[in-house]
Image (cartoon, rainbow, N blue to C red; front, side):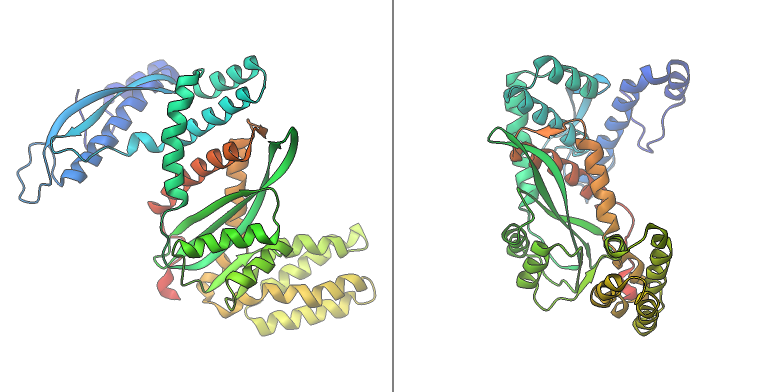
Length: 387
């Protein structure tokens, strides 16, 4: 087996892809993952194959075959070995976590009485295979240990904290209920985004949010200088208790949506939305307040309920003006958590109703863990030195 450490595909494989199309995908995946694992071993050893180096951390010891069932069929990979032990490549595992979690969720659907034919069809369509009890047991043990360790890992300093919730349908005691998925994310002092935690609860009540936020602090979360979130009653109360004294930025996007409930005529919606955007796009807080006063005067007769609401609520979106201008666009809303929520929805749509809270927690944890790893090795979200 020949490896190409510059991670460029050999010409023969490109020709194969051209000739065979998608049928050559298993071989392409095998090649790419093998190359990634080879590079990972080189980094672990701090030396390339046959390279003499005083900084070498060990010695390569060949490869061990491992066959994995993937969505494109069975693929046999060559797992690099190290003579001294203590090495296992992450490249292969990272892409399989959410797939294992999906298998687990589907398996639990079967246990809860969902049609065998339906579960088998979904599993085969998505993952290219069906599951049996022994596969479920092994996958559950390995996956749950990994995800539990990720959810309880120590945290550190985070400058900006984002909080949001979404809902998934979960079966409980014979009925289907909407479970709240509480998600915390943040921006670290190095400018990278990080997913801090997830919790599945049957509501967004204060006690659930408070327990979730307290668990983040217990894991070492500190240094927060701004919390960005919507104005949910339970979240607001919990935030004031756990992060007392930390400035709060109410999501401007949600504020614009909330305003729609106070507009008396549909024909006014576009104009009101434009006026609110003008307020939030002001260069500083003083100018924003001036624009707000003008809007209040403008609508005082046409929409008195709207003006009462605006005077109290719109200023809660002004906190961002106290932070570096280069950061303000990223701090105005919790929209990037909304995009995260959309990705979760895309991946959980196939399940429709989770058999229990644990199945829901398992799948979404796996999805968020994968996304978090992409963020860790991706580009900066904010240039923190400008702050």
